[in-house]
Image (cartoon, rainbow, N blue to C red; front, side, top):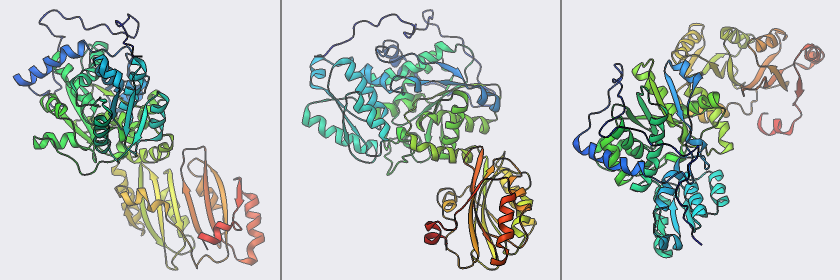
Length: 550
């Protein structure tokens, strides 16, 4: 039996509408002198904003949604020299803003439509919003999701009572299948973004932002998939405080809105990147394109590494983990501040989702260092002679080594894959020049995608030169100088034939070392092992050594 909630009860989570005298607006702040000002609105743009203002103010969202916090990112603010505020939509009951628009659409459907049920296509967050809304309203909900949707989101929809159908690799594929099922089963389609009621529901995010922060506000950064959130946010902000810039954010491999705005018409991308699955949309909506084209001030495009770094930034400030789409706004703020050299501004990022698969965290943690430009990668060639390895390590000096991969493979030269912690991107080139100056041929791999994704994990293999080799796993205290103390204690006649190390963020680094020890020196070598203060285990007899290393 369908049930419609009655009037919205007064509660701490029910927002109070902005109090404005008739015909007036909140005080405006002057545009930033060191950043582009907000775009001038045309009469048509003003009409669009005014039309949506009433719809946002009367949107029904708080039966299921809550008013989320607008809180400072203190660490990030100090680092960037600007006040960074996070609109915590990741704290909604379904960990995303999407239930606002879904419920506002569904609560307005006729009873007969609810009795037949609803259907939607979604990469996950809208699906949860529809499922929760259907549960609240007591109706059936069929959810078509791309097969690439993280399992976390699929399970969440099922737990809310949604009937999940997996189809296609992107939202567009799932959308086409949902339209077929809609016709076959007489269901009502609840669009994730291209619907005025959905857009108005998402616009309540902006309503809360402007009430929660009534002081100077320079820009609000909004992730874009199909465009529902940014359309609602831009419409409300431009109706109430048009001097505030609204900046859309997309990934480099899913920038359908930016491409559409540039060409003056909606375009369909051939492929979309799947890392930020919440924004992986091949074509934006017709209505969202109309609104965004008229009202959005600017667009920022960010890459995967920048998004990973932003996830880390938010975690450091909030101890919360965002999904990639939820971190786009933060990544864009960092890029925008650097590009325009901003200081002392107030910038808001809408952290729009936190449905992150746990298995992705390993990738995020590794790539965050590149996004923050805190790690440089190099391929270094050194002479294959005793002492050269130690000499190269001495050249690294006090720098923190993040990765070191080496396998003996040539009688004359050795090729080393090394990662070094840096504070600024330009340090990578300076370090590379210092290696070359000391006679070590060097290739800077810091921006090489092949190196970051694959080669770093493939260095090594079998070697006919690894005679008299013994393999050991060591645990080093994760502090500068530990490696040099190990090398200094070694006999100069023992050659390192293999070395593998990767900083995993723990207190102890785990290292695999191959050392060539002649038979007549085994006793001396065992004495050397006993003298070390590091825990170790010999792996020479491990079957994997024979299969892959010898």
